[in-house]
Length: 282
Image (cartoon, rainbow, N blue to C red):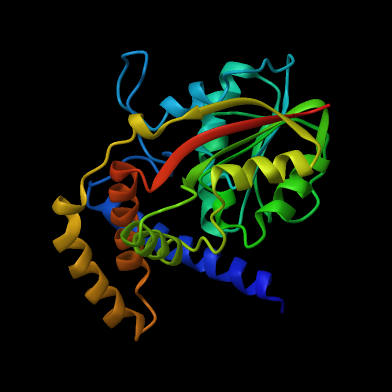
């Protein structure tokens, strides 16, 4: 087994644990449908409601899709983005995830909504993807890649001529302060992000894959975040909890919380930007 295979297994296990916890919260009435977006809510720059669906409109800016587009969601979670956009745009939609639980629950929701041209499959975005695709996107998923340049190149190969690849992710700044660098390391370790490219790194990977950058959007001002002073004590508590639970092999929730809080502080003080970058194949 290669190191990449080991990493993919760890990511799958990470999401399996988080899914179990989400299911338990749902049973207690704390969350909604299992088909809800895994990605974060954003303030709507158009003045609408703060929602995890805001990104679905913003990431379509800068290009026009053909009628009945062929779309790949690279790291689709429960398929919530496809559930939102496929009825609006039509076409054929396929999502891939490493999590069998996400696949099962996503496809159950797709069937319940009677969407015939949408499906979730088990798979890695580092494997060849049957295409061609008019649009490939990854929302907070490609950052899990151990080799983002290779991942981008693989996904770009599946694009139709004129097809677009969109990356929506957290991108560390080029020259963080020592304190920011320490929190970036906490975030990337806890959220299983071994490479975490900067903006320049993603752009270089897309250009090396033969894509022309056609649209960028810094979403950071739209993110809900708290400051380091607000989160320092909870972060310290989660770090202690994660160290203890890791000894028994079930520290995933504590690590996820710790990574999320570190990320919040980095959004607030500029150590990480949450960005959209889209590139088009010639």
